Image (tube, rainbow, N blue to C red):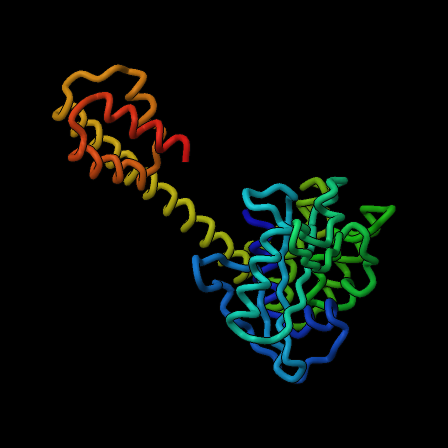
Length: 286
């Protein structure tokens, strides 16, 4: 289950509360924006347009510090795309959820020879729990805040959840709280204070679960398509060149679906095994 996804749901459902917390303003008019940015699409975690302040608040939630594209460069990329698309100032905040000593969690800028881009970083384990315990929208983040007594903190969180009068809101906040608490506390300790039954009845919990199942199904479909493309490519190779050395087969087997499709098209331009090996070498060097 994605911890980041829980935070995205909260930021989208309670944009005004997140703006108050991160910008220290009282937005009079706010709009949740589409998180997919143009050009080659990338998807941000949370985008809200504070219309009266004429500013976009961009939030990225990070469970881990390592990523295929470095976080600092992603923030520069997001900023350029947002300014190009909306032509307003952008405040960017990266929120690290899980405690780490990695310097990436303490870095607040992207720097190259010609460019310096700055953004804010919040480390949840350094935050005081007070403002989170008193706001239902931020309450699920409270277990990740600074504490010298895990049991006392979870007890306070459970009491704050219990004070939420609306049953559906209470269920949803409890579900998000229990999920995020799993980043820091053992399951048995969490269950002492937060009821799993309440969590499972939550609409938000069911939505997160459903999205997880959908992702699993999509991955299964993608694996099936990749296997089908591989079988087709191998049959084309067999028909074109007859028996092929096993080392070449092994190289082809690790290809993604798009690479296999490209190989299928390229085969019609090949006249020998040497052409095939040259093509494979070029693909692996890219």
